[in-house]
Every structure is written in structure tokens, then in C-alpha cells.
Length: 465
Image 1 (cartoon, one colour):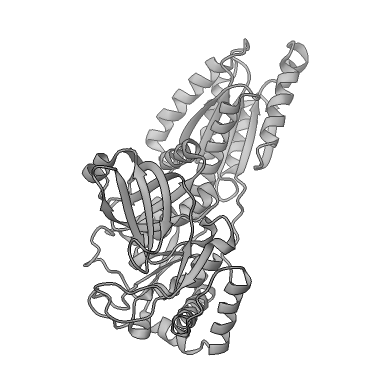
Image 2: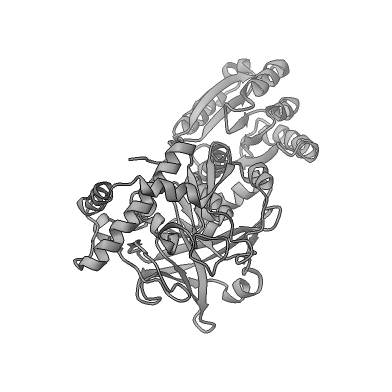
């Protein structure tokens, strides 16, 4: 069975140590400090290529140009002394995200040279949008400095990895029914990175015809063997097996076209009021395997932008969040209830805290099959985010407290409950789309910083409420 195409979770960063090697021997304490810096970088878990220490402008320029293109997500220049402003400026030859790490607490003038170089690079970025500049400061044993480095590494890695993703829209867009999903394929690729293709719903129907009942049964047994809870009732199991069939048909298209993300028209038609597609039903049944076994990133209701955003978060924080639609908000308590058909099993603490159920097609869904994955998600902090705008140049970001998930608040659907930090701001400025990325997290400040850093790299305005 297919798995998601492997993209390394380790940021691939080129490191340029900017320092006259003769100073390592002649300046008291500098050699030891250099060793500590290098050890800190090597301990970050990145995949790195190291250059220097070097102070020769031509060498640094050559190194930066040789690392550009498809080799590295970013280049990090580490500035030790006050005679290297020109060398810092030459990091712009990388023509991509550039970090400048300097040390304001040392007496060697690191800060002075870094500042001059950063100023030049910021001017350069006005004419070369591909150049993105991040200032990083602090000693190598400073936890805050190390987190700044990690933030830079993960943000640039996510942007870099997205260029290797491919999203397939199956069954056409619901743009008439979901106008907030207003976007263009060229903007999607140029702004967020992934390539894109459209697949007619009849292609999925033909793939479904080739899925044998024994294959669907094997998939259901695999879920049970993994420790997930399945119902005892025969009718529910029949629905789940039908859902497994559609999941396997989607997997066929995933393998055939090299897809890493799928946005499926859940209605099976470009008309939200017509069930003309696979099984004549809500297409959420295709989410079962994707969510239960993590075999592909899948977006709700043909929402390609949401699918891309889910992929982004996968690279940024190494987990696929839940996608959910704001459904109800209590003005007094600030509790948002967001509803969705199904959610990623990996959001639960263990497989036995995941239920696979038939689900309930609610109004206006008067017909069809719906097999879904319900993870039990523990209480923790939460990020609620949505990329929006025709140019995909804004991301709404809210925070709050994730209170839990259930399938009873909206019967037969996965309901997420989040106590928002600013519910009025959400209602006033945050209602910008149908489905949102909902990330439960135990590292809220870290993850928000990474989201904001990613937006900086992608040229997206992060709007906090």
C-alpha cells in the first residue's frame, strides 16, 4: 500500500563561517568560541554542508552561488568579527533564504559587520524577492538563540520541501459553493510551491471499479490490527468497507500521478446540491485511509489551498493537523466548535484512542456512505490558521486552548472545541475561508514563531488575532 512520498524532515542548510582563520590562533578565546558555535550547529539535527572559516570575498561568493538552486533550503552565514561586512553582503548570491547569525555579547565586532551586511541584504531583497533575510543572534549555549536557529531552519525547510509536492484536484472545484477558495494554479505554485493537476471524477470512478472487495476487507483488518476501535454492528462495517474501497481507488490515482496531496470534490459534482460522483455520496469516505494510516494529505471539499496548507504544516511541525470548518462560537465563553468529517489518527496519543466509525451524513447530505476516522485529541494549546486572498498572500493565525474532540456535539462528525484567546477578533477579522488548519500543540510559542517565520520566507502577511 502507498505511503506519502518521503521528503526529509531534516532542514538542508549550507553553513558559511565568516572569519579569518588566522584570527582563530591569534585572538584569545576565539578558537574555543568557534568550536562551540560549530558544535551547536552540528547538534541541531540539520543536514548541513560547512564552508570556512573563510574571509575571502571571492570564495564566499563562489560558495553561495554553488549552493543555490535545488541543493539547499537556505544559507546561514555565521559572523564572528568586525571586518567582514562585505562578506556578509555576498551571502545574497545564494538567491534564496539567508540567515545571519551574530554575537552581540562578544568584543570582536560581530554585531557591527552583521548589521552592515544585513542592511545591504534587505535592500537586495527589494529587487530580488527570492532573497529573504533573517537575523539570528545569541551565544551558542543560549537556548533562545538555538530556538531562533531552529525556527529559521524549519521555516526555510518547509518552503523548500513544498516545491516537491504535487496536489491533485479530483472531481473539479466547488468554487461556486465555496467562493472563499478563490485561487489560481499559477499562484498556488509560485506562492506556495506545489505543482497541481486536475483529475476528472470519472477517472476515480474507473479506479473504484478495479478495487476488489477482498482488498477493502484487508484494509479494514489492517486498521483493526493497528489497535483502532471499530464498530460491531454489521451495517456500520459495510459502510466502512465501502469507504475503504474509495480510499484504495484514491490511492490508485496517488500512485499513478505521483500525488502527495489530494483535494477531493466531496459532492462528486461541481454542483454542491447534486450527488453525481463516486457511489453517489459524500466523498469523505475517501479520507478514511488517508487519515487512519497517513498515506496522503487530503483536503476537505475540493479545497486545494487547504491541502497545500496541511502539507506546509506537515513540513513545519512534522505532523498533519486537523482540517475543520468553524461551525459555532459561544460569545460568552469564547469556545469555537469546528466541524469536519474525519481527522488524522496521528493526533491521538495512541491507536486505541482512535475510532473508525460509519459517521452520519447530516443535512443537506440525504444519501450516501461515510466512513471516518475519529482521533481522541487531548487538551492542549491550539493554532487555528487559514491562508487566504486571491494572491495567497495572507495567513490568518489565531491561538487558543484545545479542549478536546468528540463525535457527539455534531452527531456523527468530528467536532473540535477550541477556547479562543480572541473570539471577537476571530469573528471580526478571521472569517476568511471555509476550512481551517487546526493544530493542537504543546509548544505554542515555538509553533507560532515557526508559522510567522514561514510566512516571512513565502512573502505572506501573517495576521494575528
